[in-house]
Image (cartoon, rainbow, N blue to C red):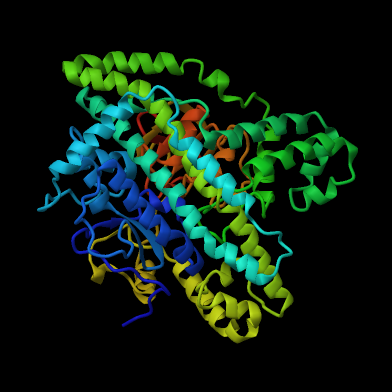
Length: 576
């Protein structure tokens, strides 16, 4: 039979194709029991409610409440490609292929095959109303304010961290109800942004130049996920003016805050950094996972980005680099318009005006859905800290493997009673983490056991690095042309080798990586699509970006001189 992960989903035969595309960048690691029960289960409910509100979902789409849109197979999170394509199938003028381009980008997904029940006149009429309303948007939608209000309200209810275990657990268990509407808001804005951007994708394709969409989308301005990088850059400028603080950074970021505590020269830096953590401390790698690191609980993640910014000789502000953004957008639009009929031109022009608002809304609602997790992560880590005082030997990532309702309370009372179970699950988690999951899963028999994954990994041939002159092709992410030394970075906390002007080559494009975008000349990532969160940020920071270059971190030698064309989606090895 083989060994399966501690939680395993069931493939819905009505919607069989599941993919790691898109979700691999926001859920890059093995899913914990804590994250599944308190996060993914309410997220599935919120996603369905959001699609019902927009008209995408039909009443008979799902036979049960079990997660289908967000699946958990072989230890990893998947998105249901079959179902998400319905957004394109049921939206007038859109298509399943447009959704693939916007959300998934890579992996050569199996072609869409129409099934009975896919088309829905009722859904199409409701989606048409949604689209017409979205295309008429002239300001940030009200849903953004709702997200800020809900997130702040739940954060204000957090008990003091010296409260009894029972109070902290009660707050932990209140999270799904608070999280659900916030995640629903994010799914609504994401769907609308995808539909609106789909108009530009289709128009670029009609003009025979799909890469033009990177110019058409351009920068939206005031995107929440770009503020992390620009705020850090302002701190970096202050650091450069203080020789004592510069020397402290020269000695490394480990315990830097402790080392600068009594340094009067560091007062300005420390004040700004504390304000940064107060504003953005909820973010970090794998930030949908409730046990994950954040800038709040692991400040060295943000300090590493600051360290890379402070040594830059040039002005890293994106303002100058975005100076011709409107000109590029206008030029691209002028190329596209002659290829469109009258009605498509009308939609095209409205989409150009509306998309910046929906891109901003998408990132803002995402940010608030992650923000509401901050007090939960603080409460959870306090509970884990107490378990260590009671003789427990497991940290946050290991304790998260316990069911938060049926097992966590017993562990907190007597860590020794479940220590063996935690160790067993941690060992299994490490095995799943050491192997890559299949990119597509289309039937229950495709769901792998750990033994099958290990056998596949053992039989996989070593990837040959690219050679001088090779041109690697991915997808266009953010426009622009840049040259630099490639630096392969697998963890944003371990980016010390990234020098200003280097090309950042990373496995994922999670927004937590985006502070490293500013000092980089360009960014290349293994996965991603046009609507990937950090691809939006790359455009805001005017950093050329190539996405969905499968195996980039293996193909591109560390230190190679490369040329990145973000419009064509290519990486050329100038000197390997």
